[in-house]
Figure 1 (cartoon, rainbow, N blue to C red):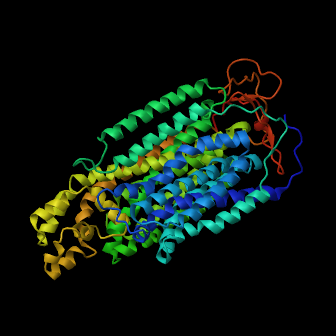
Figure 2: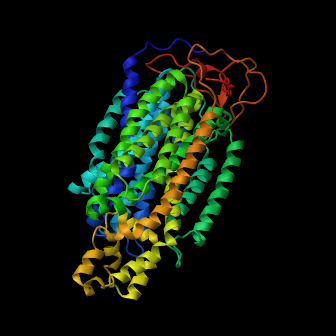
Length: 624
């Protein structure tokens, strides 16, 4: 059992919460801020992202940050366990800030400028991963079990809210200067770095654990395998040899198959390595496994929702309601604020309640609330009444907030103290991988839904306005992804697609005005888009149900400090696993082949009793 802890300084844990919340908010905001700022960014570097051969720049600007975060959070969490979570976290602030400075000084033009931005965005994502991988573990170290729900809830809600606030911030800042999208991180990063180095401290360790070997083969197979799959998803969205998407492209198939094979090899390696990067034995903990399955399902649904709503607002609803296409990115972010408000209101409250009543009921209810919101959006007409739309997305926001905080607290409270960095990284990997996969999944569903009807609608609509038949047929045959990305970029899709044909100049003024007006494209795409929305929100609702079922299966409310009695017949963990049969010997338990780091937060309250018990799964009671 734990010895007496250091004198309690109740202020320290709130300093940790404030700093880590600012960090994860900044990292999450930067993952989405660029979406709305893409038009002025590409204009500023003199690059047409929809020109032949340039779509990859656009996709990598959107996907690169998410891909890197999905791949790196687990190894960086492992490094935090090995070398100090605060040390890796603080270094992440430095890396993130330096990358932001370099991004804001892009000296190039055209494709070279785009590669500069993509490259330094990758470095920025490395810094964001160092922050995200260790922030939850640091919080769990300093907050007692009866306050972790509130602390992790605030932290998790800040990350989710940052994704949506970034949409508005990107629109506002890009109106001033596209470089301001990157400048905004610099003062926050500098202040956060200094603050973290001055105030945050590693927890004191009564045992100095032996240094475990680094799992090189596990890291390599995981990073390359997951990276190959996510790159394949990115490449699969691009047209290939007359197909609307590139899923039949040999390199895409090779990356999907090769990436899957490497992940299988990764599992085999992790089961045999003495100090694995990925603690597979954590999946024996029911709360950990169920929480991550639920989190993955919700993350896929939420990530796709963001893009679908942006396309819906920018490509159809806002133009139909009098907004010019170039103004739609900013206004789309503003009209999505009810979603953010719902998350901000429900998240901290549900975290507070989960400390007292457990995670299962709140997280299950939150997932079901999101299902109701998705079903409502599925039934909504394309040209909706805004307040109905606002109520539905606010409902999804409330449900997301209700789910996120208790789910994160449940996962992190189930993880033994010695491997919290790994546990935090694994949790974040599921969330980031879900967000990256959702873009591929939902874009593919939407493009597949549009591919059957949009070409005919385009051709007939343009021909009716006097566009030559061959030109109308040519434009209609273009992949739907071009129209969708044009809408995301705040461009008039029809005007953009016809710009290179010269046919606009041959039309009568009234036909030119109709084709380039605000209502022509929305009316063309409304019917096909409605079909795609039904599929997308139907899949989101199904994912919400999966999350609800997983939340029910997580087990009952974990006992608070002092309420838990040591289990009889505890088992001794073996290298790379939490436990196997056999009596528990005297001495520190072992996880991943190293002595467990029995930690006491310094300064802060005594750790939860369960942190000092043998690291074995504990059966949960049947009821909350």
